[in-house]
Image 1 (cartoon, rainbow, N blue to C red):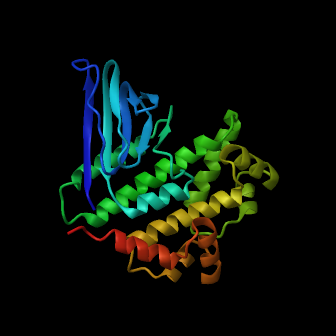
Image 2 (cartoon, rainbow, N blue to C red):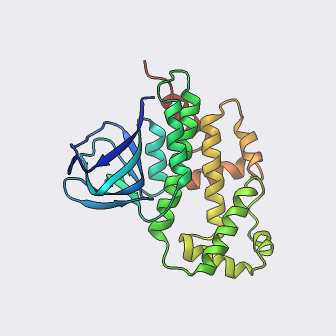
Image 3 (cartoon, rainbow, N blue to C red):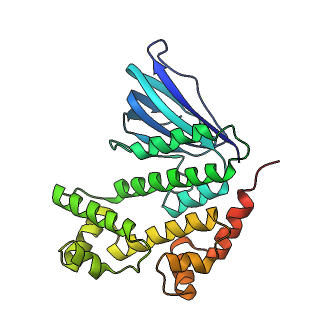
Length: 268
């Protein structure tokens, strides 16, 4: 696995920055100030709190807006990122994805944490784990903002409480009625909020989160059996887990794990 990470400060000493075209996937997070992001045919405003994902070989550059702009970035290669971006709905022909106007402090913390591992040839597992978390957090937020219509503050609070409860109880079977009861809502009301907020049903959201968690464990913990992972995440049995995993990702858990183990081997 090849990886580069850094912190870039755009200042008023330069009005435009040289073009980049990296052979890696790249995450960029703007934590201060503002700039514009340019490709051959697009221009996007980048403000503090904006997160950006780029595919390899995208020719781009930045132009400063204001006095200064701070960008944290990480560039890396790997098969898993390609599969995850596709799983979350990013089309093959889309060169980048952007999340505007949302503060993602955890994303910046994770990216900064990579600085500790970037030059360590023995930190492959730590690097893979952190990169996986960055990818999952980015694409969950990206997909949510891409499909969600306007919603009021009450719905926002309910959705936040519901997703928090689901994450806390991720090892339990996906029981929507129990979740609705915990939130003192009708099942129908809760499902309407999830459909409006995320574009999918409560059960589908819960299931996809379980599958995302299972993908992480399959990739990062080769000593765990597939059955152990399935049971830890509340699936009734292996048959049920295999069926749901294939419905969500298009492949079996075993095939997914094998591809990850092969692709994540250190380059020589």
